Length: 545
Image 1 (tube, one colour):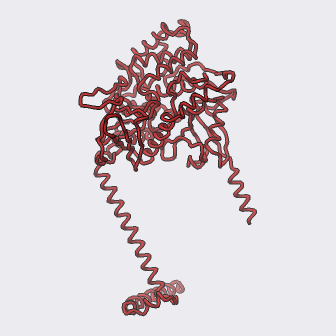
Image 2 (cartoon, helix red, strand yellow):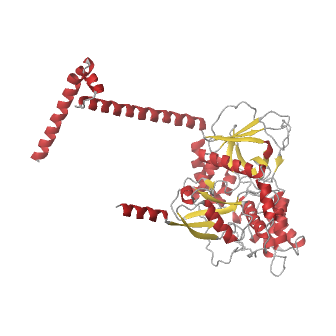
Image 3 (cartoon, one colour):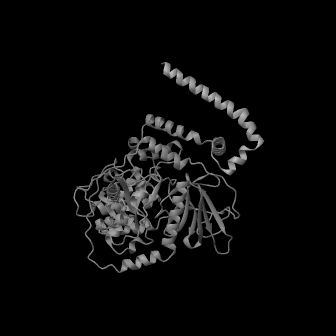
């Protein structure tokens, strides 16, 4: 038996699990890992597959069974972190955006960061004004299809590719104009470098948005960038706090606190409310990791380590763009290794899952709390805020990333749902300056049906204070019921032990008291006789039948 147990235990430890990691070009890398394999082992496998040495900027992201996103911890077991059934699915993404992406040592690293920012642009995380959007899209065109060729690129060719959640015809014409007249002769590497330099200057560069609400119940997105902590509301950046001004990050339940210390000003505590305690913990953890990376010596040491790399630049296989409006990204990108036939698979998210995610991000109930001693002051670029302050406008539309609470890539249904939710709320649907043709938008019947579902899901959030009170009352009632149940069980156990023949001094003393004798003769004995009579009658009935 001992040998059988030992063999079973060893088989459990040696069990292999299949892991699939979606790369930045939407291809997939599949491998097997042992049960006790750490996150570092899987990450090293990926970096070797990608021929990547400047690996400190990247990480592996996954979504747990509760739809909460996490970054894989390299010192812990992969299997224990995922808490889901194999095969496991994860995503390789940029975790710490380089403060100066153009200064990266190797072209392969710059290319991977280029792919990540291109995804950010498409999914709505990187917002910009129309003029900047046209230039960024033109750089992408130049990098992936080369110089303009009248024979290959007919009128309206830029409309065949998807750069943003939605395009306008005017924006598409501007993209084509820049591509034709300003970027001719640029190599893919040069165009990607110019793209990175431009993206770096935008207010939402490096933003990984966390949906929250402020103390007034207003929706906001919190994010950590190479330069500091930002808060985005509408199409404005209402807070910007440099990393050296952040003194403490803290969370309690759904509540997130940011402690700020500024020169010649009082200390400030900013308070926000996440949709769930798990989301708040993830927000806090991301903040701690970003502050440690950018505010200490880590980022500097990473750059110094990169400068010491001496090898022949690895070959980069860039693929041409696939013109399709139905694709969630404008291209499936390069194959970064010689491994052929990399499998691809789109993430298909159902309409109802998309509605659920929108409800969680846009209609989460805040936990109201009083001030924590210090004033809650908006702060932009370390200046004191007054009633006449002008906040930074980051785009021509409201900030509303498509997949702030979903894993990437976002499927078609989720994108349509994002656009639909904006129509229902009366917000603009894109960064256009004029409306796009109705061919790419849901028809009136679809809007009415899906809009009804969205409103039905959101109706339950109309009275947040009542919900909080009801939850509190239910919790108290549950606690009372459990306490009463435990007391009843303990009392029953005490009676049984006292009435038994157990010869213990404690029970002997109880049996000798007048109260026990009265209970024994007036209640216990008649009850015992009644049970015995009932049992005999049931037994006799069973024998007769």
